[in-house]
Length: 93
Image 1: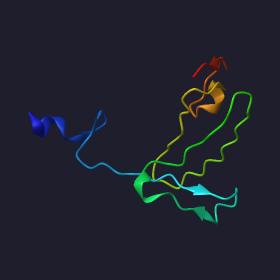
Image 2 (image 1 turned 180 degrees about the vertical axis):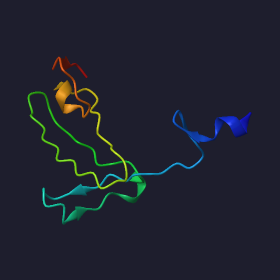
Image 3 (image 1 turned 90 degrees about the vertical axis):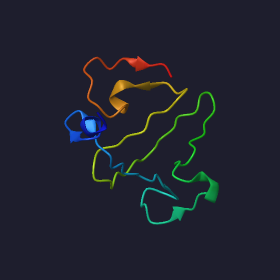
């Protein structure tokens, strides 16, 4: 049964798992990296804000496949999610 379940197909990811590391930079030039604490591992930088703040995140994807971010506890429009949506309804996080 495992041979059937770990095959790489259209609906199965197989047995090779690629990791992507999120990095934080000082500005939008993406030249000066802010090194994370060693205990952070592959976890990306924490994005902090307070009620009423407007957050702008510049996401530069150099990976071999499309990735995006998903904020928890933040209100945003569907068109900021990544996938295209036609109704532009507000997501309550």
